Length: 637
Image (cartoon, rainbow, N blue to C red; front, side, top):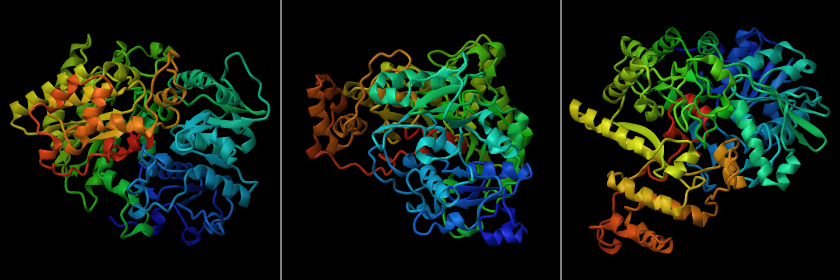
């Protein structure tokens, strides 16, 4: 379908004139290219404001050098500026775990690296405050959301205060921003302070008995244990149905975090996804490739939220653990839009969400959920109150696959196999899980099913908040059996992380032996990357588990991290000598024979064929779901 220029949010003075506008209510500055699609945050916020009757313009990837003409070209908005730094954290988007430049910026045309600064939230805000000091600036997006309080910054290697302090912005929206952005637009800035799901700086604040007062920023700078203690409160309140206000002192001022809105209802989520997106990049990018768009353009997101609570994941801090589901009708409407795309060949690349198989799941007794503080509904065990029935999800799959024009719908999002293996007291739920498992493997896998055991050590998995590796064994047996029964020849592709808090060299050596026994030559692997506002990052930085305050070892130096990472690639001849030396050094020479029994020494081994996927596990490898990209930053994790 061909779209006119006026079908997109305006980006230039000329496009404002085409609409007959002489004034704009809100101007959004985005660190990403402008793709008018429900997976791109700036488009969602812009369309949400537009649907509420406001005039919105967007300036994608403004040039922050020179005379700042991109920041001045649309003038001043009637209400406020909004900063949307990008679907991914800018530093995760730019650098690997070893702080090396990534091969491309997936959210920029042709993958260019020079179209966004580091920390665009800070850079854009400072420029706007210099040019228009009297116009309010509102922050949003993953970068600001995860930096709303004192946080550890891996790239600067130090604790940073709330990004409100560093940027000079007036207000911050955390989490998914449709509800708060409309409320801000309806009110004058003087009435913003009690809007839910917002953060602001106050010179004076009246503290009530219901408020949670954290250790001050200065206390956290002096005492890492204070930072660890803070994080438990932050994570718990991010995942509660009825959260408390959080206050943290910095200098003479206070950062105030208002409790979030309740999870969106199905009707509210449908309304967001049903907005008139063109689902296309802006025409200014004609002839250019936007890698992230290429990956998700034939995919559909069906829910928000994730109750997994993985220690290295940012979803709970951004979207929360309560699942908000779209209706079947809304999902089918979007699938029909995908079918009409001229380059669609009948294959839906992903029908998923932050986790593929949590659609329709919730607590049976909601009163219990309203009091719950657990960051995970499935760790250390699956909550008996959780309804794990996959029937609603199967109904979605069946309805989508029945549409004319759909040949296959694939599940590219991560599947939680612990939910599939769980045996509840509800026999109907158990039968639905079995049916889902078989249909997933036989109908929705494109040759390779990606799952995320993350490690093989039970102690490391405990700190990750992941299930025992024994469950992976069980799931793989089911996967292999179904493949034999159906005459299929599919692979299961596991993801693993090295250097996670609590992981020692010996744990990685055991991982190498176990995955060798399973006949895996690992491809999808990565070093743990500390990203703001995750339990694992706070453990890594402080040395304390925020929940138990027990001390936890973490590999931090490049030498320690490389010593762990090498075990992923035990099968490479060039790694053998170093691995053998490391095994002797850590007192595990017994593993040498288990790794290399029957394999010739490196000097006489044939050189293996290169695998270009090894060593390049990125966020897009981990999670093909667009929501996952916005939420996780986890998988840089």
